[in-house]
Amino acid sequence: MKPIFLRQALGIVVGLLIIAMLTQLRPVFVDATVQPSPISPISSSVLPMSESAALGGMRTTLKSAPAALPIPFDETLDRDVTARHVVVIDANTGEQIGGRGAGVAYPMASLTKLLAALVVVDRIEGWKQLVEILPSDIREGETVVHVGDRMELYDLFVVTLVRSSNTGVEALARSVGFTRGELTSAMNAVAAANGWTTIYVTDPTGLSPTTVGSAADIARILAVALSRREIASALGTAQYQWSTYSVEHVPLKRYSTISTNELIHPTAKTVGYTTTGGKTGYIPESGYNIAVEAVNAHGRRLIAVVLGAATFDRRFVEADALLRWAFDATPSVQPSL
Image (cartoon, rainbow, N blue to C red; front, side):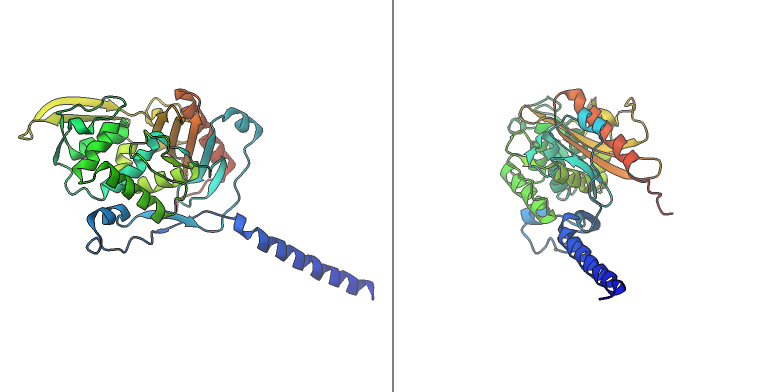
């Protein structure tokens, strides 16, 4: 056989081998386009109230689609980020930019309240209605609201997220007609409907270490939560003022509540981005957790999740390091006008 034919035959064989290899690699390319949830068209009149609320209305969800492989951490970042599970995703596409143990279920602590907010917000009919805090609402944790306080429902919703009130979650659930068990079931239903397969809720406040989820799924929950105006407003608030009321809806006392998320405060020394919203969490079994969204000058939005940081401050330091690295490691996206 002449050399030219040998070269042609060899080229064909090599080409076929490359195609076969790429075909085998295709399942590795995962994550995210933003599309309407398949659960959106379901009518609330067809379902029982609790199930209808669990499924919700129109909602953004992140679905699997071809995407670039995550970028490996550089040596400095790999050394400095010590949390057990971390991830950075593109908030618009769901593409994972980088991570460590991002798909492993882990105690969510108060990050669980993001999912509780998604369920409760769909059942609220009037934000101005008064809710009285009852003895049965009281849960362990910081005392933000007290037995006998009457609050407007919107204030209770915001304070629960801003200050991560466990008692607030109980009062919110009751105010929309849920028992704790019904809220828990509804949260698991939302997770299943959206494909957040690592999420499993046993306590809607996150106090139980058996309430778990991966960093990647928590990032996706935050992306959806921030697509809801009422939730985004609360998660982006550094300090919130609210009142208690008499039975006649007359203001009694004025209070001020500061966010547990230090990256949202005006004093945060973030460089190259602005924090738009986030949520913290802590129980002894989880260590210190945070999920936070940030946007740079070009309009690119990223979400970082840190699970299991060793100290109160480290979660903020490590989330900041992840965001700075991710904004630098990936091209800026100029928003279309």
